[in-house]
Image (cartoon, chains in turn green, red):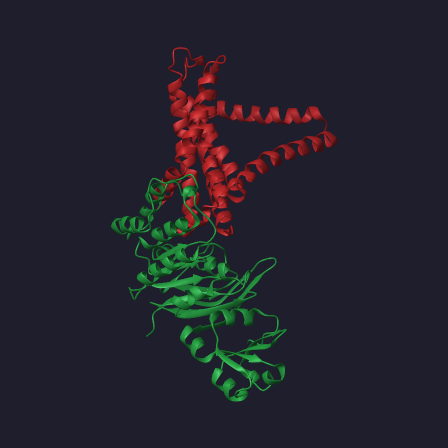
Length: 290
Length: 225
């Protein structure tokens, strides 16, 4: 039987100007789920709902087999988190954070924290506000990784980081994932990051989950057809997931690249879709996604 | 868990709390040398000032948005709320102790003759419980703005009651009613065994505290972070 790190069912949250509607997705243990979507799609809302930072209107969330409301404390002991928005006192030192946070986790590993602080080039006596954006993210990650969390929730951890830092962070995460029991949920705009580490990709748009699929399947089956409007008409529309019309022709996103190749022959360019293609074409105005 | 919440608040707000303590200390020293004042009243001021230190914690939490961090840790929100009440109580007790110590200064003009420990600790404890029971739900829901809302709303409400009373009954009668109310409490105190009266007041305060704690917990549990 598959063990799930995360099982979300019918998750709904209504805000005054936004609604996250009926989101259901699953993440098997030991895998990385990338949450992508345009701004305001509901990525952060889902992560906050998982951690009970906002109250849901409907649905259920199970983390590592635990209900996130009934077993909240047990669940949070096994979850590590890194938020995009700052939520630390600027005037407190990193050492005070360790002293304040470590006692909440029975599994806190002081040696591991020490090692991570060293590896990340952090200084315990430094104040949080004195850290650069990248170092702040690294510190939050050090805290998240020092209590043997089985699930890491990362909200836009690479946003605002330069490419060197981003690569470093992703390498770190890859290291964490050497332990096959650990799982990660990673929301980001920078889809190239996900291509490096995500096993599953969930795409959100306007509070709806458009798809949640293994990245392998997306890479294997999805493609972009580029050509004249007339040629694009030949492609089977039942697999069409999005269209973008530009000055130089039309781009069509299909979930069956083999069928698209057969349909257009050599009259159009058919390429494998990158996550960026998928995000851009599905977020466009003319999309045909289910 | 409660201990962890207290530790979290104390460690990460240590400097701000110490700075508050220093300012309050200077004020209390000044007060002790600024004319004669009964120790009971002096202790009430000390207790209230120190017990409102938790407002520092809550307003800093608002400013730095650290509630997200605390609420993501393995702890129930109601435990976090309880932690803030306990912090208020503990700092209030520190305030009473500190104010009492200051009366030992040879130059202090605090009147201590003929007072018992109970007559010092009792009113100060009542002030801590009453003040925090009223203020905490507002502060927990609205942060520092909540304190302002509470104070302004209290004043507006008072003015409204006065205006309505004047229109309906006349100003003098309101004073009479208040005086009669205070008089009735005094009569009750004098005609009742002191222990029975004390226990009665304690029960009432405890009920108020529990209700306040419950409202704060409910409000904080519903707060979107």
